[in-house]
Length: 317
Image 1: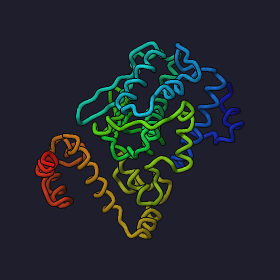
Image 2: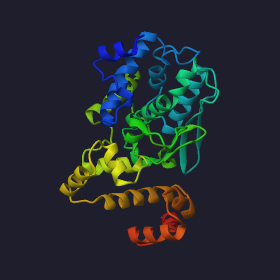
Image 3: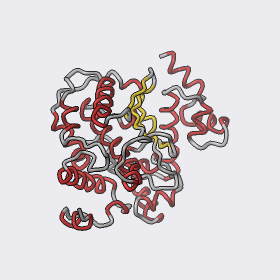
Image 4: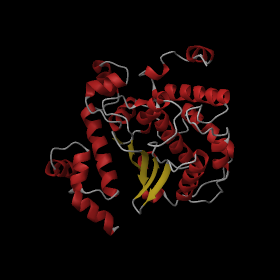
């Protein structure tokens, strides 16, 4: 299949995967391309695996979920179903009272060529994104703020890409596996009635704004970019496709400054990690503070108490 011809037929830009344009646009174009490739190859892996997966396998797995099923059971059912389809234990779930994690380990995955293996970062990150959108659709709940972190084998020197940027979560680079980790309290959320066609429409939710965390203002776009990793204003402006001066003007129009947004993002992430049971020292390192004392001072300025006192208050409620 000629890639250039395919992109031309779908009226997609030739630089689709090298573009730093709007994440929503890239995601929708990727969806159209993926659907075309699946249909043309008659294989859900698009010939990327030596073990062909029948088209319709994923919608079938989703369609087998019953109304009232707990979300944690959906995690297990999907992981088990994919492992049977792929013929290996590439998907796994880990769960505690504080965390619910969907993990993908492609170390021994039977990629057909090294070329496909080289594309694994973007492909598996798109799967994590798809799963996240699916979990939101199944429960009817906003889960964006319940993500603790996402892990990827991608290098921190690489652009995180549209899928990771869109989810606005903490990213752990150079990880041994790919995963999306949630606050464990979502485990018992009930699934609403859904049919197998729901999976086919999850990317469409991005286009129509149905995904709960879609950014709508410059403040939200900046927060989204900050959550994805870079905290330098010049880099954030570049990632958003505008000059530093333009970004400052846009934020001024919304009566907010970059430093305030960065502080807000750090506070939100700090509270999320502390609620998940991470130690103040671990949170300080995750947020880039030089030591736990500096983090504790900043946290006390945000919420009026130290991280340790905040966690103690959580335990008593």
